Length: 463
Image 1 (cartoon, rainbow, N blue to C red):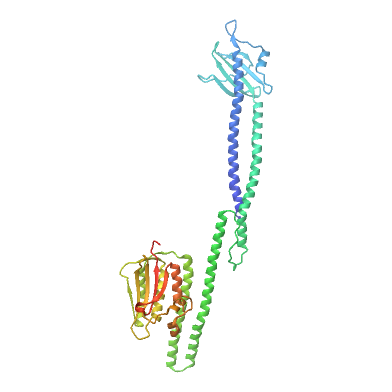
Image 2: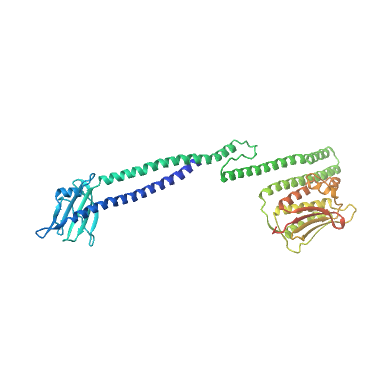
C-alpha cells in the first residue's frame, strides 16, 4: 500500500501548484498585451511610411500617375537600419506603377482603406500594410517590412519578463517551504509526543503550537486523555471496591455452607441456607450499588438531559417496590402525582435516585416503637419555580450531625449499623446522581419531626 503524502508536501503542492498556474496565466496575459501594443507601435511606423509614399504619387504629363521620387530618395524615405523595406504602388486596374515587382497586393474589403497582414516575399516573412487613395486618381500603396527586429524585440521582452519572475517564484517556493515547515512542526512534535507515550501515561501533552488550530487540537487531545484517565480511575476504583467489599460476604457464604455441610440435622441446613440467601442478597445489593456508582462516572461524560415526566417515572418506581413494601408491611404511597410535572434529567439516573431513596426508606425508615411504617414519595412545585422530589419515612430518623457524613461512601447511620444491612452506598449514589443531574440534595427531619425527609430540588427549565 502506497504511503500517504505528508501534510507539508500536500500544503506545498496545494499552494505552489495554483500559484505557478496563476503566475503562468498572468505571464501569458501580460505577454499577449505587450505583444499587441508592440505590434501596434511597429504597425504605426509602417503605416506612416505607406502614407509618406502615397504623398509622392502625383499626375504625370501624359495624364496618368507617377511616383515623384528617385530610387535614392525612396531608399532614404524607407530607410531602416535593422529591417529590409519593400514597397509597391498599384494603379486602380492592378498594374504596377512603381516599386518591387512580385510584392503582392492584399485585397481590401468594401469601404476598407487600410489593412495589415503578413506575406512571404523572397523567402522572407513580411509585415505589410496596404492603403487605398482616391486622389489624384484611385491607387494603392503596399509597404512591407521584415519582422526580425520586432521578433527580436519581443524575444528580449519575453526573456526579461519571465526570467526574473521564475527567480522570484523559486524564492517564494523556498520561503513557503520553510514557513509551512515551521507551522507544521508543532503538529509533528505533538504526533511524536503522543507516539512516545506509554499506555499508563495519561498526563497532558505539552502543546507548542503557534496557531489556534494546533492549540485547539492539543486541548482536545488533553481533554480526551483527562476523560480516559477518569474512566481508568473509575474502573480501578470499581474493581478495588468489588474486590474489597465482596470478599466479606463471599467468605461468609462459604463459611455458612461449610458449617452446614459439617452438620447432619436438616433444621441446621435450613437455617444455614436461609443465612446463605441473606448473605447473597446483601452481596447482590452491593454489586448493584457499585454498578450504580460506575454508571454515575459514565453518565458524567455522556449525559444528555431531556425533558422527562417526573410523575410517570415516580409512578413506575413505586410499582416496582410495592411487592417488597407489602411483604414488609410498609405503607408505600405518593402525593402530587395527579398533575403532570416535567424535569430536565436522564431517566436512568432519575430512576436510580428514586429507587435508592425508596430502598433506604424501606430498609431503615421503619419505626422502632411498633407503629405502622409509612413511606411517602412526594412531588411538589417549589416557590422559586423548581420542582421538589421528596421521599419521607416515619422511622427513627438521623440527627443533624450525621446527615452530612451519610452522603459519603461506606458511611452508615445507626439503623444500618444495628441491622447490619447495606454497605453505606445508597445516599452516596443519590448525592452523586444529584450532582450530575444539576439538582440540590437536602436531608431534613420528616413530618412532625419524625423520620427522615430526603429532597431533590430540580431547577426550572429556564434556569
